[in-house]
Image (cartoon, rainbow, N blue to C red):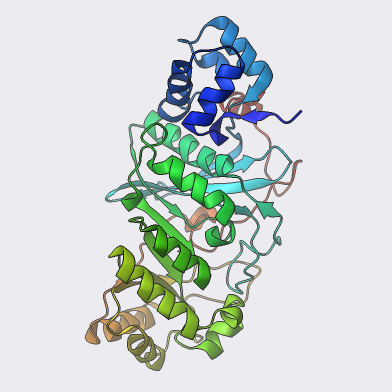
Length: 364
């Protein structure tokens, strides 16, 4: 019989599940409070529930929280967590200490199909989609970790391993749980969804009318170069992608962020900056320049500081809103483009199962 995962249940489904156990509907609110407000990793910790109910829950369900395998802390305060999944796969999640408050960068897939040449996330290959509960568990476990250090979770970015819009079936229930007052209760204005450019899903997202931030990985100002480094461009070229972005901005009233990795001698020239300016002129958008975070197995190197500043200045001269992203977590391979799934059900890549951490994370 399939085990019920508590984090996968809507409030109505939770009430129905508990009713099947002979419990009154109000117990659903109590269980959801323990999961989303207090991040109780075990049903046995839900102390305002009757002992008999806790025992039934332990027998019939799992909370859905993940086993923490490894935790790394950067010199800049970034925290990278490696979580083991129930099938022996793994994902990495990052807590980011921004000046405006702490954010969590979550993964949506094990591996990635997109095959961008500069990114480590797709190197292990695509394995599977994460469930909405597995995505939410990352958020809640980072929230609890930050709270223990006196910090609040202010925002989230779906920028970890995987293409969020390629996991549409899990993305929608996850987002519903995010803004549901009975569950996480976070405004979608504090949620950023990153995509490599899956244009049809951008349009689907726009039609929902939610106040999300859309972040599009652009990384080149023309189809020829973008098609070389981002295979998704062959299916959804700029002539398809950019109109979808325009429509998203018009429907939602939210400006689109375009992420642009700067790679030495590849896409960081002055002519490319001018070409990018022409491509985006008049759009409600913002460009986030990101000097490449190097991956040892890949042949690319970050642009020189002078090239970054010149690229930024040309965009500014052409009235394009632009910033250079602050680099976080590069010393622990937690920066943009560096995440990957490194744990595959046994001791590998220097990742050791920490039994003490596993116990604290509710591992049964």
